[in-house]
Image (cartoon, rainbow, N blue to C red; front, side):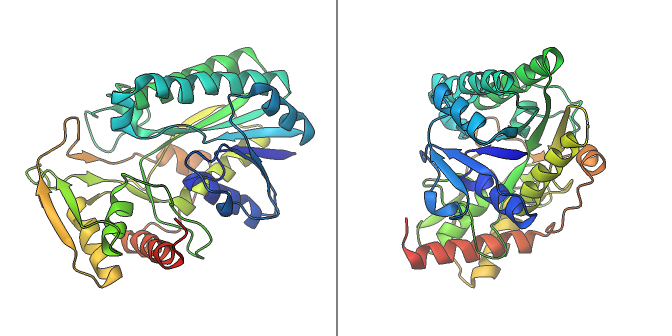
Length: 329
């Protein structure tokens, strides 16, 4: 049995590759390198520089490696960009996922793990957010992911395929051993942006909104360490292989930190006092978004080990510092 990881040269995908390797299983990777980097994929892992839209080539890879499970990360993830260019998101996230599912069914793939997002909830009515919360995505990014979840549900009912969709909250950090991290250009993730500011890649960081009804006036988010998230994917695969049914589950820690909490942590980790500008709220931003993660904890037997803001930030900063010194990107 072999796992195929689409987008395995990207941020979360590369950490999931490492998690499988650490567990003794060598996956196969497809990535078109539009946002990923080949140097994030270990040498003993087969990397196909390919777009999943090229279905004939995907089918050949599925057959050649006798793939039993697909973990699907490949797609576009910038919410504001999805508003400006919705067709790109429906093509990359929905249409290409449909083609991948068709090839999975045609080539006997039994299990499918999908990289979904908390953006499917839109502006939640309450916190923490359970999987049963209303699904009201505010942008094509979230809608494109929700459409893929629905397609998977329908396909699983009609074919011999089980799936897990993991709805991520705010993914951050880097491999604690320094083997991988976020290398995406023009990233928008708060911790990544703050670390880039600390190492001098950006002149300043802007805080969007300081008048929320929160303890310090800034928005609160549930930050999850990318390594814990990668482990959740492997556990999802193991559960499906044991005969577990299809599942949609949140991946977060169930508690949040404010934007200013993050900035203080980055300043502490880096020992640098960088510029912070206060700006207005962005349309559609919520005061607080935190996951109800009880389903993932119970069903996946998931035991997060890196649930600490300073750990997440410290790993992210050390990775960012190493990138700046290596000058690789």
